[in-house]
Image (cartoon, rainbow, N blue to C red; front, side):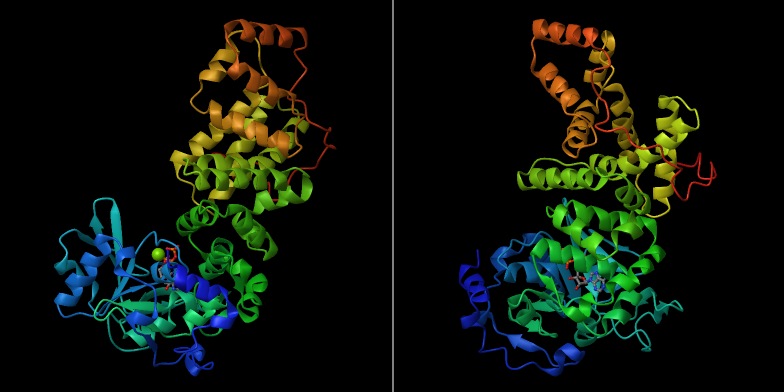
Length: 471
Ligand code: ATP
Ligand code: MG
């Protein structure tokens, strides 16, 4: 789309010398922006949605400052079509609300306005100032560990810029003259494909540990590298993620795994010790079961492929694969205690879900189908009589069959059961009968674990039923 500029970014010989001088004090947290006039950058109004333009112009015409900021400018500069639009302004949320009938003030920790146009939502954010400053709503709170509990002190655009996370996210496009204001050398970091936090990285991660997840997400999605200082504190600070409310983490998880670059993102999460803070039991299972990590990678690879092909994906399937390892460990432990397989799976599922909910809230509309997908893993090997057709008709059959294939790919199971179901689905009535007869002759033939797992002790953290019942 922005071919000229993209080529520019990719060829080190042709850097944007005219407006990027030597390293300035800006990255250190300071003040005057570099202003890049319209004729010197490729970001055009044609790449913005009508809704975004409407919001910008209405604010502008009412006498307020109005800028597009964040991902939409970053992505435009990278030659990618922006997918959503964030507006920054000096109007307060109440002032914004009076300008747009179709708007709502949302958030407590971070108050912003959502302006809705059909299915599109434009996020309008008032410039934030320094937490200690005595203006705006006077509301900024920080915990003893440095966690920013609220951030609703209004400020000016300079102050707003240095409170953003990465330099590449602090680029503002002005609707007044179509220039880009670069407060933290963001354009040269885009050029160098570098993710760099603004300010002192450890402090910024402590203020908001989700920034560690955002670092990994942007690295995976944009194929950028982390600047060494931005990268260094992550491993040590990863446990700070345990302070983040489960509901906020659920939204982040979807962005991490369903943004089309799930495999790369997952590997980075593992590398930096972040994954185990989000999915502790899944991480433990990956240490104990050789197939657990390949299974998750296979599920993410399949999700990435589907997203690339613009086919639908569901978090239920992904969570089913992520948590299947721990479900299997707990089920094995229950069976070892003498419980039959079906109740053992049910008890295991319930325990895994309730422990996971302490970290990430999975809405029921995803956790219920996820459990169906697990239950069906036990029904897929039962292929006699009417049961086969009931299984085939189950609304989650397709997802369960897909998980079965991934389990085989990952080496948990021999591939014969998946092959059988593949053949059965494609067969006519006559052929189906033949396939059923074949199973009749050898009913125990499939769904067998590839290798017998050695008998295991109970998984750690299982305090015998105290986490029962509240899934
Ligand atoms: P995308 O929309 O592609 O996920 P984005 O950068 O636009 O990426 P948003 O979550 O939409 O991400 O946030 C918009 C902007 O708000 C960011 O670009 C950044 O400037 C700022 N921002 C968002 N989250 C944080 C945070 N946790 N800390 C500091 N600034 C943030
Ligand atoms: Mg955005």
